[in-house]
Length: 412
Image (cartoon, rainbow, N blue to C red; front, side):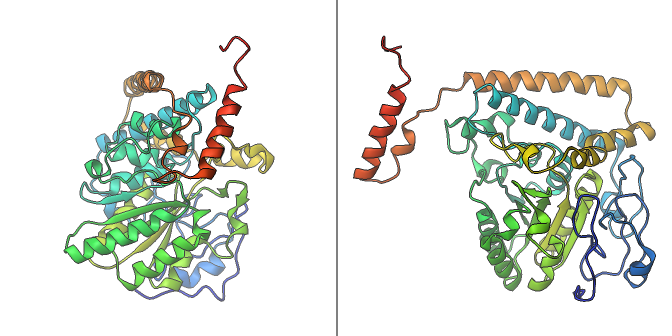
């Protein structure tokens, strides 16, 4: 696969303030479909034929819920049935409901922190459903939808955020690694694991999730280098939600993120991260490449973080309402619902039943969290050093005095 040069191209500004691209899969000449649903021309005519400010990306379902053709990726969703489509919709709805409940629980003091995935459901469900059971997933701390696809009980995700465990599930039971808080380090873990998979001769693949902010970490660059040199069967799935906490993507890179793969010698592709069908198709393609011994792929899911980075963040301090409103019009769940309704693949009975299931999930999550023990406030000091340390002892004493200061004179 040849690599397309970007030296002669000038970046365009998208409606979200990002540089546009001149194609999807690096090194190919087939056209892609843009965010407006119109079919793109090939690379030889694209520069003169396209004047839209929207970024070019792989898209199979427009924001209006219209199915569009794509010669490169249609085959990867050719066998999808109405039941499959309803399943993808159910996945996204229930994942969003769980996420909303977790956010509410944090606001009520039941969780110490929560990282919401609101707006990123299509990227996670589409890519998660593309994996096989024997594939291995390395998440960050926001892949609640991928965890759902891998069969991890949602309530198991909450113990760490409550401070009562260090993960909550056995990674080997679902081939889904524990959440990684250190930004970008999981890409190194995934690359090393993928190198091991290749040495074992297995035909499974590995997928590593990270955000646009993590793409600036040295760990990610090192992962790209090792994955390329050793032809590791790994897919790097970057959810570009436009904001690394308060830093916009345009301040981190001069080229679209997917084009970074060119410098390492493997393909990159930008996909509409709010289109669950496109995310499913592109990830299937990338995983298939990995299993066939063709090496790594970088997938950039162009999406948007509707809420705060975490519940400790206030996004109103660094971004305007108009930006969110523009992205709300591309909502991944509403998009698929429009398609289901227009295609007569789902009726009101289906949506009503799903609403009831959603509320039941919310109740189950609330009950599970409130049944968890309170976190041990002093556990953080216990395992810092195997044999203890004078400074840790001093800090423990200071913290104990601080906690005691909240008690009234009666000791209550």
